[in-house]
Image 1 (cartoon, rainbow, N blue to C red):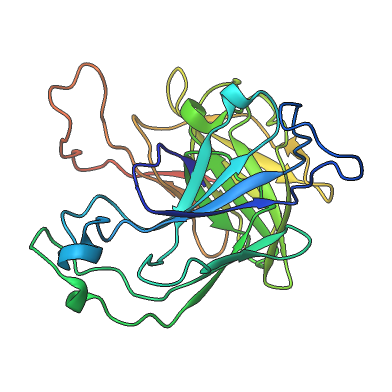
Image 2: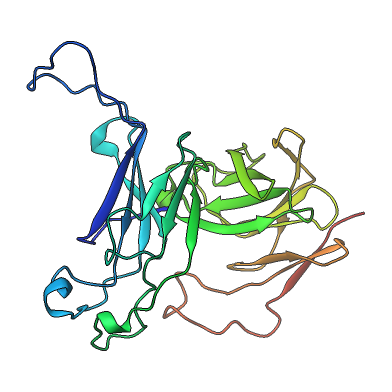
Length: 288
């Protein structure tokens, strides 16, 4: 879930596992013994508050979200992480709830999202919703994820992160995926990887527990690592030089090659978008 500023005026919120001191009468000026783990809120971006008066939804400000504020650490460092969750305040304020163990949040979709575009819309343009959306609050995903890849057996999930905003120097998390749920994650040290550098894409070998990773720091290389049973990583061979500005990596179905594109972007190239020349695909042989 990515960290953002929440611009929406209409919010429903819950503080998860919050308790107060009990017993003796409380001095209202004394410190409140708040023990919440995080705040969970949902934001409806489909309408202005004035729509309750004139029926006009107003300009579209974004998309509906669920936001998580982790209450750990210094309150001055708290940030809101959010993910899309269709919801509507055109309903009673009871569309989000938390499981008793604090693991999952469920959001009901009373009304669907408004139509796309900037045309004027009214309440009549909102349709009845039909979804219950379940969110895992314990997955602990850092902000600004880049690539996401399932292993060939579907039991592991690799997620990479841009160092700007992720809050971690190791740009990779590996999750176990069991019983149709994302489990706890680990952020393994990557052998030979420069800390603080972006891991722009990874891919799983179709047979073996091996990851191929694109390294764009100081040039362009592909690294191969084995993923061990405890989700630690072991280096496999030397990094291999590849072509300029790679962005995507894919193993071939038999696992004998990887295919990597090259965008040829850089500070010496005028403009932002360019067409890569013919021959920009590089293959690297993975020894059997």
